[in-house]
Length: 480
Image (cartoon, rainbow, N blue to C red; front, top):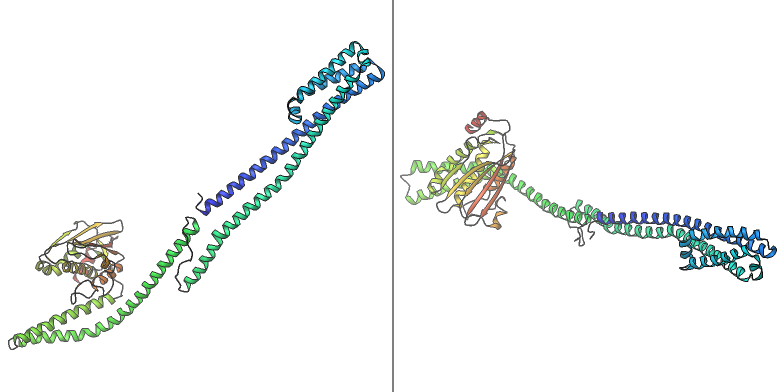
């Protein structure tokens, strides 16, 4: 019911407040009840005093026979009857049901005897025993009323005096539960988090031990912390990997620069050999020379990819016409597309917003994607380039092919350097990683969706140009 610590603390607080209010109300009620009982006791004592006055006049009459005592006693008797009628419910509550009727009956009989004595005093003087007995019973009843009422007051005082101790006991229980809740569900997990944080700071990314399957705030915090620790471990591994790749990039850049000159010399010598001695060379030798030229050019392409991959300089960005970038890139591979029997379609509106980019780098991005699509289409197929406004800040360019697609297990490694799904001698595994790196340098990102047997879609997200049209910059970059 109460899954969160907030709900539990709120519940304990509400229950404590309700209990405190209840105790306060009970205390006030007890005080008011005691006040009422004191008032009733005073009235019972007044009743006793009236009855004692009646008895005093009764004794005086019996001693001296003065009829005036009967008159005075009769007046007090009327006051006594009036008081008894006022206290009817209280009398029955204190002495039990039927006491009021019995008392009224005795007072009535006592009043009858007094009435007869007022007519003829000798009636009482000759047989005073009944009057005395009734008087004694009335005094005993009044005394018992006062005694019991006082006893009830004492009990109420004792209950009222016990209320603070009851409140203290409940407070101790609530405080114990609260301390236990705070200790077990707050302080202990926080100590674990503190210890684990220190371990994370020293490179130990193991999660917080224990089962935290609850839905309270601490359980969610620990789950989030464990998730963060796992992400940090993954990011740490990625950072180490990126450092390794950076080191490899620096290393390969140096090698690539050293290989450029020998490769150029090989190509130059082979071209010269073909141009100068083509007619004198046997067919087998010419085929070998052409094979040397082909392999040297492939090696040069590998060196170029290595240099692109290891390049770290910041790009100089300007406003560019996306249609022009795509079209001029298409012209670079137009012959390959036509020879492969592939249909190329560009769906970009004429008034499409300009993008912020580096012309040659954007050409490299889309050239790699086009070449990747060409190699993925085994028979005749199509390549479709479409663009749309993704948001106020970005445009989206989709390069869609209907080639063989990419397997799900290969898809997550598609931008990893030196990872390739192509056969031996058909790729270096650097084209898409170079593309990924260049897109990142443009402040954008790239996504890929693929289904085996149906094709692949690469989505490039590029920043819009905020400064309006810049044909001059675009032309300058296209001519450079």
